Length: 389
Image (cartoon, rainbow, N blue to C red; front, top):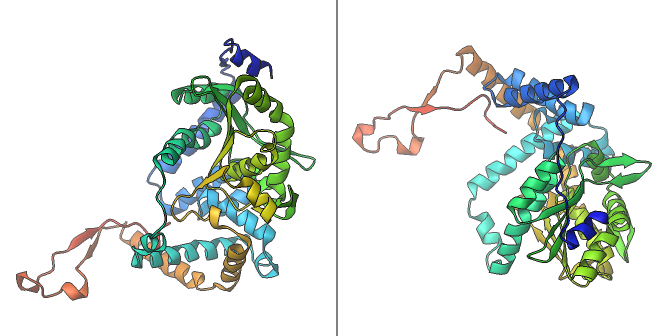
């Protein structure tokens, strides 16, 4: 509250960073830089998988080892699926579930590639975003997707200033203690725009994964909500609503809640808690998960929350029916083992030739067209198996 009053009176002090180059700090930097460099080097598949696995293990412990095949956001999805899945899914080892999801995704990508017009057709006739909607998304996307993820207060402050905002205070690390979910967030304000923005960070560390995993429903504001995110929203309401109300009612600021992924879900539920006390409230979520149900709760968010979805992002579409269908598919999908074997044979075959460039001709339908039917060989710079990730 003190920094809020300092901001309102024009006396806000900037955060300063004191650099202490201890032996532990040097070792940590060396390890992080080594992993970062190793992930970008053209290493062999096995060594690269080891590096990625070590990096994910550093972040998530044993759960991170499944990240050898999957991106980290998909690893977090797997953790949640194992939590909410039925017996057929829970009985499958994590490596089998990983393989099934990886190759099922590859099959879906193939289907989309064979029908490139499907997305345009599915959205035909829907209204386009207004210029004001695009302007709002452009203003708040950097706060939700970049500023909230900075590792230090000084970096948060610097990045926020690039977009015209001052950093009042922040919580850099989410914690999970005694059933309470305490999230990472940034509390920002802009005197020129007369806006105060609370940016809730998405899933980044093990505490956030645990919040994601509390996926059962609980009563919330006349409806039902994701238990982990509802707990986080109530904690934020208790801790930060005095600051929001001070700047909104005392200084005439508009209150805006933004977030990405987990943070967007928390922001939406927090909007339901704050709306009776903050008439001028807006909420912008990027990749907002499905976190609420019930007509009364959903109607309270109507006109307040905007959800921005990027193309085929799975997180906003992960409703109970869609997750149930996915779990059934994963439990029954066994073809991935044959496809993995095919890919592995391709890797071994390429390795025997030291990854010599492939020479391939035109499709069969083009044979005999022009030039006496001569086919000019083309280089194929592909990597190992038939299905990349």
